[in-house]
Amino acid sequence: IICYHIQNFKVMNMEKIDLYKNKWIKCENALPNDEDDVLVVVVDNGDAEIRIGFYSLCAWYTNTDDDKLAKVTHWMPLPELPKD
Image (tube, rainbow, N blue to C red):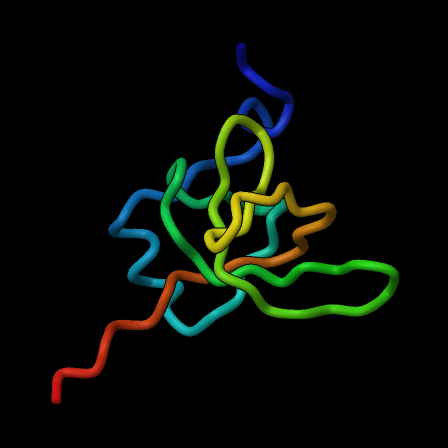
């Protein structure tokens, strides 16, 4: 099954993701690779918060409990882990 989102939005490859490090990407402009963990902005009842989530099968989910997220507006790649 191909969903509407996949047909109309580009999935970002790793080279393009590197260009967007530390920048929020609107979901309407592009989506991350399927099931890659990313930071997401979730809007719920008018409140926005940041979570770690992933996009899979035409929906967003939280990484911690696999709950489906209602409205994700933006995403960005996770930062690199500290080296020391």
